[in-house]
Length: 73
Image 1 (cartoon, rainbow, N blue to C red):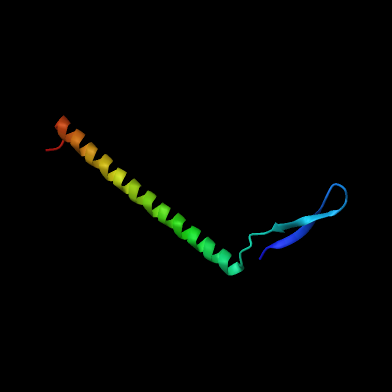
Image 2: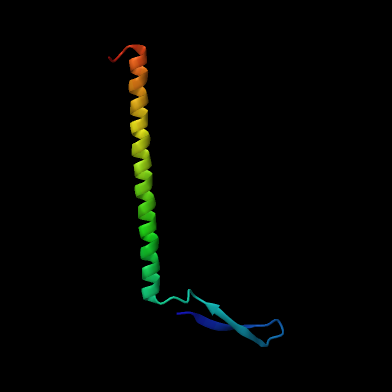
């Protein structure tokens, strides 16, 4: 729900209405926030997957270096 007020002009007259607020109902705001939250959770999951993948790559590289140095057969 948007609210309006009429702003005074410099000459003292009443100007055009100015809309204030989101224009969304409470249900629409909750739905929008829910969608944003879901998107943020997906981003977090993607970051976690990337971090795990990078960790596995680092571990594999360490093992290869150790093998090249003769530390592990």
